[in-house]
Image 1 (cartoon, rainbow, N blue to C red):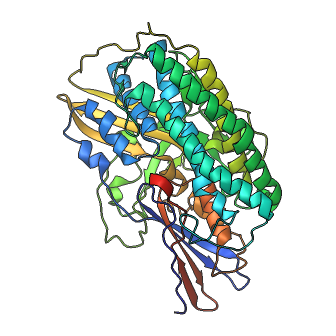
Image 2 (image 1 turned 180 degrees about the vertical axis):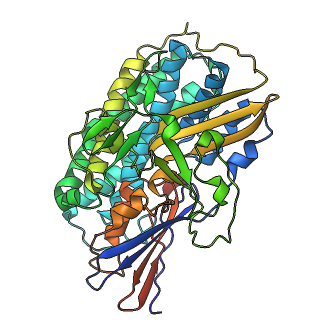
Image 3 (image 1 turned 60 degrees about the vertical axis):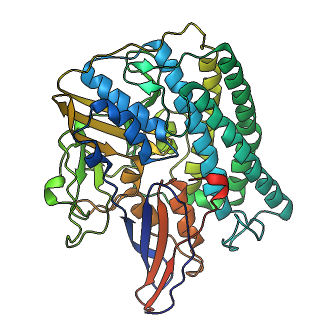
Length: 478
């Protein structure tokens, strides 16, 4: 078959993702497959438990965005109860989730993506890595590497902001059905605001400058990795008890902004290692029955679709749908939109932080009904997140979760339509198939919360190269 090259790992995030592409004689990608190769079974674990357990158990799905799972879960439970959290709870939830967003966006750029564009020192955690197509000067490179280190300190402060209001991070404790159980002390408020000032200054003066530098040096990536062109968001950060959000929910298709109907969400399983009966279902009636030996299947991810169409999720979707970003859809547009969202959110968090008082009453005790059905929609940093709950006799009978990476990294659906990342890879030309940096830049721009391996198959030259490509894993980054 030819030479096989392996470099390991990419990112150690929420399981494992394999991207396999086929190239033609000119090294252009003509086919792509995205494979989630780990089954975890969280939806099965929740069946038979008290519905309120889901708030804490689902956070264990991901150590990077646990707060969004907590929010989605409490929204599903509160929806089933017919309850809406009060404004005090909304403010505290927004500050906790916002802190998680700030940390995660900084992580994505500096610790999961920037080394696709900047060569670090010849020592851990900057090696192994590629030395191809590095366009920054030596001085610019050193400045970005210094900021890479500084970003670790800033992320710690963002983590501490969340922990101050939630008890700990990851896997927060204060977000529960009924609101938030921790009322901030005066010292909590002061410490939170101090950390936020530092984090916001880094975003405004360092992160934005570095993103603009990379975008300037790699401006050709504004025309690489577009993909499907459809965008979707469930909305995030409630602004009142009526369901309005800072980033509104909606769709973007053919240049037109549309509304969201959760009943139009379906998951398909023709190319997934699940039974056929698990597919073509809305998550409110979803099934997760594993069928590994299934002919033609190649992923443990299902294929979520909205109204039968493929959609891309993430900060770019949120910013375009909300009129905050007027660029296009590409690798570099994703990075720019993420940075601008981080800046906007940090500014909004200053306003929310000033709304905190020691006399807040953010919690209402709820009595668990015998049975119910609920849906919780929010956004994780990487995109739209949904939890669907059914319970009877005060025990969960069905629980379905669709994460943003399930949408973006999905396999083909029953109609043969590729997922968002698969489509974004089509047409890109690889300069050196032994160092397919172009593939990494495309995949990393989606911020997939998975481990990755990248395979390149040249069907004409009968060469197969396998890359399990490394992204640094410093100081406990999951």
